[in-house]
Image 1 (cartoon, rainbow, N blue to C red):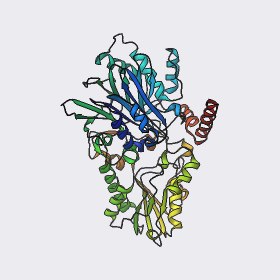
Image 2 (spheres, rainbow, N blue to C red):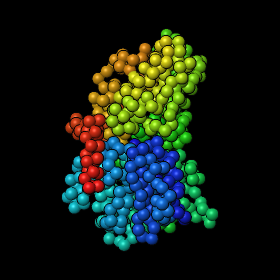
Image 3 (cartoon, rainbow, N blue to C red):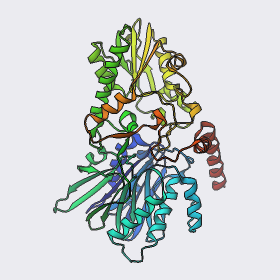
Image 4 (cartoon, rainbow, N blue to C red):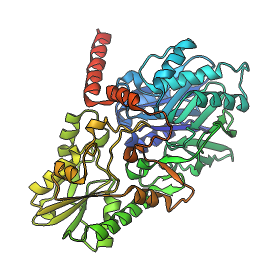
Length: 502
């Protein structure tokens, strides 16, 4: 669930890209990178780590140029090696750098395709495959400087080859910046604009609108499904639909968990959608769980706080902050490895005993994925003296893996896979468990933008809108994504690093 940003301006973009990546840090904590163009050359800095740790003053001074792209990485497949930090670069044709948010479901086919056209892929990242497919299509252009029409033709060729979810930003030396979104609009991508002191237009594209806000760009619109935009070096904007069939199927989990509450995605305020999730869930509790004698409503920080406030208001119950969060611990959902996640929960949250002692507590969270975090939090609440613990999830049961860029694990690692409500409730040690219905969740987002007729909801209902996900693909995914597989890859990365250092 990476974050991407691209910018074309009339002055240096390095600090603006850095600031944008800082506010997109919630989308990936594994690695960060920036590439700019200066005098016909790429200037690059990328490494594992948080944005503030990757970029020192000396790196920022070298990232010269008025055009650039940036990326924060959260690995869904492949390894966490620094070699897979983005953006990626190829020198032919022209010189291209690319950053990608999403996941390609036909990555194995694309690897063979790259081999057949003699394009070498050096990592296991599907983003590098995507870059090479783009380079292959651009190599058909004979012009020294390709026209917007030629660039859009190349992107149409890319869309014909790749499948899955993707939002992409790329630089072409001597040409400009391109950005495009998958034909289903699964992964978000927004366009922003500002005017410099001389009245010239400057543009930014990013994963979320909050990245625009930090440097005074105004949200123009979302990039449409299947749309590509091209911004030339001199700041001229062109756009075209580059896919034969398009429909908007936003990833519903952006609103549940990933996006910042102050972002606007596909015409919907993330904050407002979460408040409505709270309304829907509170109404369900009143309808179906009126027998629960709730004393207090407590959120599990931080995504669920807005949801919990609304539940408490509608139920007429006190709202309390019962957990203190260590803000210097990353988001446990996107941490690699089960042992690290378990340890991080205890380090991340600490209960306030007075808010739990002798009370019947309704804990509210955005979702339950593996159940590891939920189980530990329920145990913490009980140890703090809670009389009864009821658990409410703003999202339905997650029963299926995500194949479109979210690291929701293999089926066997999902707590709801093969279990009913009572079994899940017992597994997390709660006294009652309430899940939001899928219909209510979709309605909570759709109410602000009725044009959102359909959402990407595969983790809840197993319906994969690209139509290419089968049992064979699940087995392949399990080989790539299980905690054991990731541990093996981490070991291999470490061994390769030691060998390299020798």
